[in-house]
Image 1 (spheres, protein in one colour):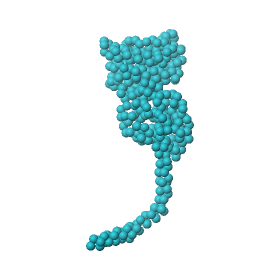
Image 2: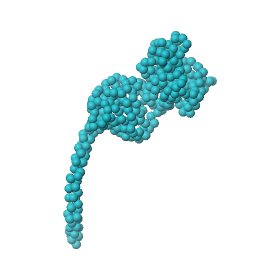
Image 3: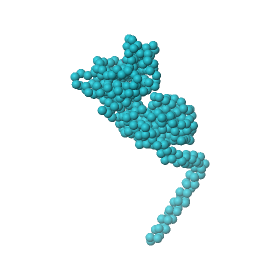
Length: 380
Ligand SMILES: [Zn+2]
């Protein structure tokens, strides 16, 4: 009986496979060959090329050890590593991955023209559009990948008249995309190593703005110089885990009252106002930092912030006159509930200081020194 049952099931299966299902399979295969074979060939070609270019083989971190020059005490990017960028993306010298910053994984891409980018997607995968010839010698087939703790994948593609960078990273991890303040051909893509890479908050106040130019000498205005110095500081501070908020990042006039109300609402760990000095005669020159105290309220912190900023600037510019720190009744430091200082970086009225202030490299160095000073104060 058992054997009979087995035979019956066997015949039933045979009937199903050969008589019912086979015509359908044959018809499907014929149809597929006629209409879809080209797609199959493309699919096989694409998947095998992806395997060939798999992350394990092209990971730049594996081939090029991470740069170890960047430490939290040194906000200044090691520029010698940037000058070693080469031309050929496939050997990795155009893209540099720095993974030793405690707060951010940093990707630097050196282009052949200014990194004039557009962000096409605001969440992972982030898509950044760059000009056609930004990275030399890439085409549609060449894909490079970099991987780190926060970067899950990255590829670069050239499509028609633009180049695209795709980045897959951890959701909710902050990402910063910006052009280098020294070499505008370098694009920075920084991905946080955690959801909140910031341990402190600082408010930066570039003095004057809009219809208030501050001090003037010829066609040079204080409002423009201090804004440039201030904006150069943003990513240096963020690299150090210091979140940065500006009272202004454009050429606009602010009420003093608004500046302090805004700052006190944000409750920062430090408030730093940046100015240039001026006098009716051309003689006076140099760097000074001012603070304000009433009674013992934050006396130690306020003096410490002013002194640390002044020391950092004089260390960077040892030949400039050190006018020291001083208590001054300036609204923005007097009305601040938090440790605040007002820097007077050079005299616009002094010809020698003025010649320095108009140089981008001097402003870059000033931004490095102020950022380093803020960092030292926050660590105390
Ligand atoms: Zn001023």
